[in-house]
Every structure is written in structure tokens, then in C-alpha cells.
Image (tube, rainbow, N blue to C red; front, side, top):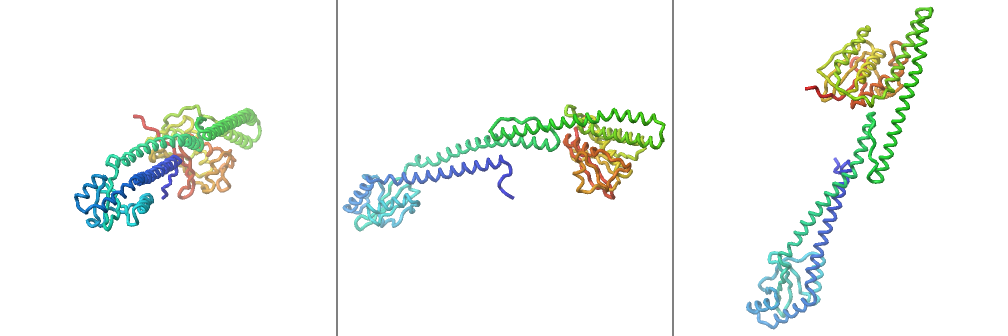
Length: 437
């Protein structure tokens, strides 16, 4: 598992947090370095002259506590004989304090050492006065000044918090148009037509959205042109087919031949109906809750009256929000496909799964190879030799494409699954609508 986020928004936030944290750490280190340099700068040439004078006073004075007290008061320091405390405090760290120690050694001798006593808040300098050694303590800055780092840390934390809030808002601002584009692309993949995306914001995002809007406009135009073409061709074919059928029925030819010709015309008429169904644009038609069981029962009843072996097994009450004629087109195409390519009986069932309504149309035909499933959902695609119509008709190859298109337009999906014991299950899954109170 990687800690690097997959989303652009998460990556922007992580990058900004890392940059702000690096800046804060660098600022803190530079502050500590400057503070140590400031402390070392207190020991200027004047202080060095004062320490030399103190060493001369210690060399000429007697080693009594009263003398040390007087010198401490005069020089503002603390004097501790090395005989009383051989070592004191801790050695300072860092190049700045090491440089201070070298500078003091140059002026006071190589035996000079620098120590820091955190508890007493003093900086001690060891120097030799005659034959004796002394620790001379200088007070560190007062407590209120020592609190400056804490205040700076709090201020830095507040600034970092504001920067992170601004970075969060900026990351959302950058990620929002990309999220809108992803949602629009998802709608296109489901066969829907999304609205135009805003062509504002950064120049790159505006250019991408402008190109996407142009693509959607072109797709709409292609869809309209296709619908007009199919509807026009279908309409133009209907009239001569009607005249041809009337002429055949009125002719005195052989009854068998006449019946065959009428059947061919009826098959052509069914193909034209499929053209019109596929070209039909129901975008302006509102959806409404429809009882799947009742709609399927009506369709099955029509086929049963025509002598077809179609059976229906309904589950619990199931409502889907769909366009009124769409569910009938789905049922008719699936039943026609099952009767044409499969073997009776054709079994239709409904059931509820999670928040979806599942409709299965199962036949006992030769089945569909797995590699042909997606191909058969494409327009003008027919099954191969392994799965042929029992009536010998060719068909237009639009039935399953119509079902797949309607399912995607209503937020569902269409699957072709193998059936245990042989055959195919045509499964349509649609989101369930709420039952009326």
C-alpha cells in the first residue's frame, strides 16, 4: 500500500504540506543559528577587555569570599574558584559557540573554556589568574526574552495553519473543474449527454472544457443526423412496402408463395421498427415510476395469446423510474431475441437485489460465446453461426443494442450471461425507485 494519494487534490495537499513544513523547519534552524550568533556577539572586544581586567584583579586580590563578592558586584558576574568546582555546566554545541571559545582563547590563553549552565541560566568562561583557575559566569538573557522562541513557534504555527487553509482552498479550486470533467466523461460513457462545462478558470482548464463542449456538440449533431437519416429511410421504405403488401395480397398467385412474400414484408417492417426505436430521441420525455412486474405481465400476455411459450415469474413489488415506452421496448426486444435465437420455454423472472431491480430473460438455445458478448451489444451486429434464428430471417442486429442503450440511459446495465444447462440469460439491471407511501 502506497502513502502517495491517487487523487490530484490529495497530491496537491500533500505537496503543499511538505513545502510548508520544510520552510518552517528551515526557519526554525536559521533562528536557532542566529540566536546563537547573537549570544556570541555579546562577547565583543569591550567584554574581552573587561575579562582581562577581572583576571588582573583576581591575580592581585586575596582568595577570600568577601573579595569575590566585591568583584562580582563590580563586574556583574559570578566567580567560582576551580578548586571548589572543577567542572561546571555543559560544553556548548555548534560552530558559533566553538568560534567564541577560540576567540576567548586567543585573548585569555589556551586554558580558556566555555560552558553553559541551563539551570542557573549562565554562560561560564574558565580562565587562569595566576596559579589559580576560575569559572566566571555571565547571565544569559532574561526569562521573558527566552520566551521569544515559544512565541515565534506559536506565531509560526498560526501562519502555517493559515497557509494550509489557503492551500486547501486552492487545491479544491484546482481539482473542482477536473472533478466536473470526470463526472461528465462518466455520463458520456453511460450513453448520457451532459450539459456544457464552464469555460472559465485557468487557461488550461478552460481550453480542455472548451474542447469537451465542442466534442459533445459534435456528438449531439451526429446523433441528430443519424436519427434523421434512419427515420427518413424508414419512413420512405414504409410506403412502398405497404403498396407491395397490398398488391401481393390482392394477387391471384400461389397461396404459399403469397404467404412467404407477406412474411418477408412483415420482417422488413419489423426491421424498420427497430430502426425507428434505435433512432428515437427520448431526451425530452420525462421518466416516471413504473411497475416492472405489471409491464412485463402485459408483454408476456400478448406473446402468450399469439401461441408463444413465454413464462413469467415475478418477485416482490418492483418500481423503476424509466421513460414510459422504454421498458416495453426492452421487454419486446429481449423476448423477440430469445424466441428467435433460443429454444422454448422462454422464462422471464424479476427480483430485487440491494437497491436494484433485476430482470432475467432466459432461453435454452446454444448460448453465446464469452468473446461475443460485448460485440453483440453494438448496433447492426448479429450472432454467428452458432446462434441462428429459428425462422431463418437475418434481422437488423439492433435489438440488443437498443436494450443496452436504454439500460445505460437510465443508470443501469445490460449483461448476457451463460445459463446453467445450456442457453443464455439476458439480464437487465435498473436502479429501484422508491415505493409510494
